[in-house]
Image (tube, rainbow, N blue to C red; front, top):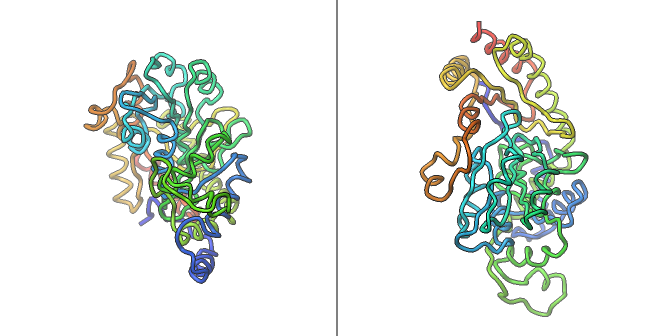
Length: 375
């Protein structure tokens, strides 16, 4: 069976975890957390990076930084993971969904402005498959209306937009290091702070609402509870695992990109015949080979193809069911405008196995079976 995903293991994880254990400091913000924060800052240009227990929690930290109140609204795509909405709804906001672009599956930047009203507090672009949204337009809209931009860059580490790292283009960026992501710590994430004024407050939120970070730096002689917050610090054991992966990030990137390119070339004949649609990477976007997906004719064809691949030992899957059609999405959100593409395109999309260490002959086999299906 060719599994859909295998968590990345690059070597060095056990050594660093063992070192963390020997240090007698395995709770958060030890040596390896600081090393990870510094690595991400150096490689993205973010003003400050704080490792978190998940991308969901990074988004929740962003929601707290927004000072949301009951009735506020946050604009986002419906084609995304539930965390994108949950993080803001938990803090009183309503999710306002707009349609996506069919080429990238990202939020349609041209539909955002029509969803803005006096209750709108933020725009949350989701960089699907590590391919950037049209951030120049989104940021211009945000500036025009005085809104914050929170990038859900869960899938976007090592991707760029016009030379800038995803996660550094808005006010806040959020990464995921879940086991399904390019770089992993099992469960984990990070918030990227792009305005220096937010750093102190973010540290307080992350430290359960206390100014403990300032105490550890020797800036105050005791720490106390000063604001709302929660426990968003990952264990040093998780951070040690991630640091090993960050050290080999270029190897992981190159390996995944090779697999992505091989899929694209082997499936292009089916595209040329009009049988499938292949991913689109807009000009100015450099992606990270987070996933390889393609689109078929419709839901029935996709269901049959996934079943056919499974019968041949291949773990292919579909992706998100649009949030606005889910029970919680109906209760806590609303869709503005026409659902022209969100549902239709989501029902056509199929994801193929893609992970660090996937072999070329496995990709050849997968593409061969896809070709057989269409014959």
